[in-house]
Image (cartoon, rainbow, N blue to C red; front, side):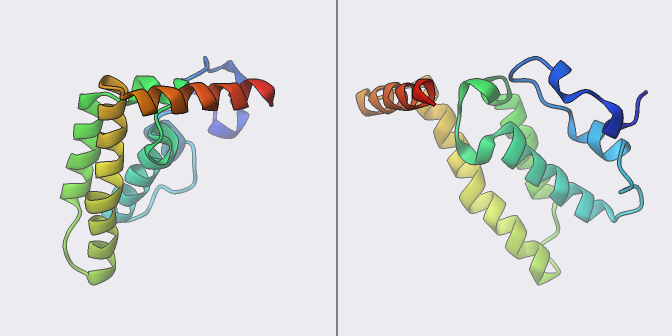
Length: 128
């Protein structure tokens, strides 16, 4: 396997991202605690796969019930102590996870306002 820094980023198809495991295995972050590794994976999923709760064409393949369940499972696997870990856990569980679930719900059951917003966004993207 090629080291991550030697991989040509443009070879991935549009809407496909490197897996977290591929990135970690190719990095120098091999000796970190399992809790920190889990937090990093949750953050990767949130920012890269779920685009911070915004469902767009590039990440639509990641907005699946299975992937959302994995995200939730990882969150729930975090310990409640120490307090700094619990603060992170609560943010993911009570703020980020609901945003992701709501984005999928809006996509699956779009309202008229949601469809209009998508149309407006696509117009803006086309202009840029």
